[in-house]
Length: 105
Length: 254
Image (cartoon, helix red, strand yellow):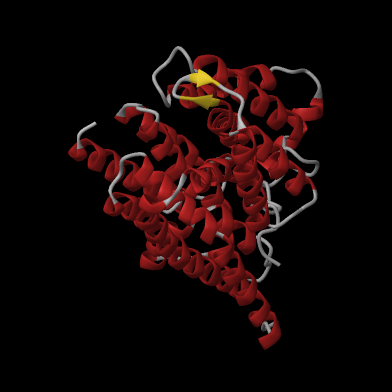
């Protein structure tokens, strides 16, 4: 992708993300009350975030792989279950990932 | 009743501590963005203008994997729809008009929503929003630059740590939707598992980034299935107010 295309992507997506925020703050209360719309907006993030977790943990360059990132994710899940603060969850994941990388070579 | 000084101090302290907690995440973003081929300037424009972490990571993740512009913009914007819902919720609490609303919209994200909905008086809601928003904006942008500039000197071990931080951060955002107390809990769990399975299954066969979008679109189709269920378990929740996000970042502050 050429540098100008990357700029197009960066600016286009940034402006779009801002407009999505502004829309929420500006629509009249009740506009999103329709159950099917509300349900869709409530549920889509779970699917996307889970997809991102899976892809960033278990794939590398288009292939499925199991490596240190899975150990790191398991450690992060334990930290979350113990209600650790966000920063602690990230430090635990980073530490276990680095350790796993070193141990597994 | 007018909030007293200690209440105001508590709200500001919570907001600022949440802002500083995202520092490591911002550094991971800066480093991931430059590793994906973006310039330091491009990483900074994303943090300054897009200013919503999950969308930023999704965008650079797609570019890193070699995905096209459509997949990159599409996955960032699909994730950004969650800020629209936060905005609807915050509009009542903040009640900003005119240019204040236009400015405030920029800071409508997971973290600011979490601290703002905890306050039930307008003055404290606004204080929570402004203190968390300004702290987050400042730290997120500073750490983005630090991560982007530092990435060149990262060795393989630090890179492995970084590669592990990114999925953990997505998991931390997902977590509150999957634990008891979440709105539509059963459906959230089903679509999360479904989204992960669809994305993994499609990874070897579609262009990078499209598997994320496909996971989101599959949910839209599945909604019809959920809606058609005769039992009242899911439909009776339609009348509940918008989900008061308990704490999207797993207790990042306080």
